[in-house]
Image (cartoon, rainbow, N blue to C red; front, side, top):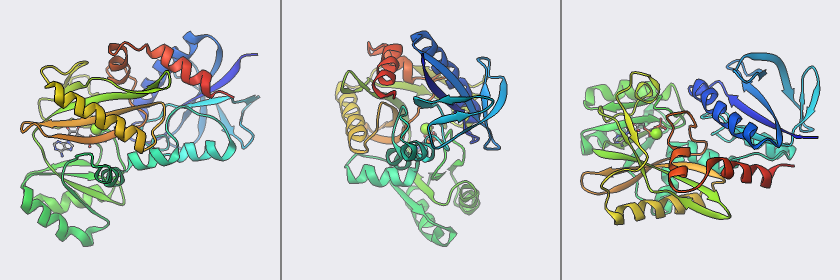
Length: 331
Ligand SMILES: Nc1ncnc2c1ncn2[C@@H]1O[C@H](COP(=O)(O)OP(=O)(O)O)[C@@H](O)[C@H]1O
Ligand SMILES: [Mg+2]
């Protein structure tokens, strides 16, 4: 009998739809392996789990129990989960905590690494502790701290304000004028209980696929996001009319800068205890400074996504990568 892989997608967050697109790519990869029975389930915005057919048509309601089973019209044992979810409850570590509790193996980072990377404040505290350069910042726990944000703005003149626990540029704002600052902070607090305020840099946006392959941690050479507005917003990311283009290999980067970034990516992967896969994003400024911007613990796998492409460009097959981690982890 073929073993069952539960492919989870959706999640109900701001990146719900993106996750459905990514899940098609993972589903195809798993089906091409041919060894497993893939059960695809969408976690809805209403938190209900529903089975999906291959064209993402919603089917019956199902439930997971504590015996590693999926309960619906029939009961199916689950041998491995692929939590193909961007944002909550996948990249936030919540769903992994449940899998740990019931002893069900899964692909990707554990709960602790996921939580640490998803919270933009926590991750910056880690980067500083690890001496990985990142943009200067302050963080606020409530509007009572706003004076710190005002002082920070006075120092830098142009800032980014970000809800701490969000992705896809939701809850992320550019601020050029101090009079807008309080409103933007209030807006960001609607999304998260912590808010980050960061120096705005003029920089190239680079991404590195960082993953485990044949027992080694690999960091690819960086790819590049060319976003004409210099703010890679939700629309720029996913609107079909977006003016943003990507390059699998960022052109004309000094070799030393590339090597530094790859080393920082591996240092972050190792010390934050990431597992299997991640995409680590950097800024490279006009002054040739390198800043680690963020770590994505379940990077996008849509047709425009860079993660699998950078891996392939690096000479590693994505299907083989996936086949290996599945074989190594399945019950
Ligand atoms: N400090 C900064 N300086 C300049 N641009 C920034 C800065 N922080 C973020 N951005 C822009 O905003 C985008 C979204 O920010 P990011 O921290 O990557 O959030 P998300 O997790 O939502 O992708 C980045 O891709 C970049 O275009
Ligand atoms: Mg980003």
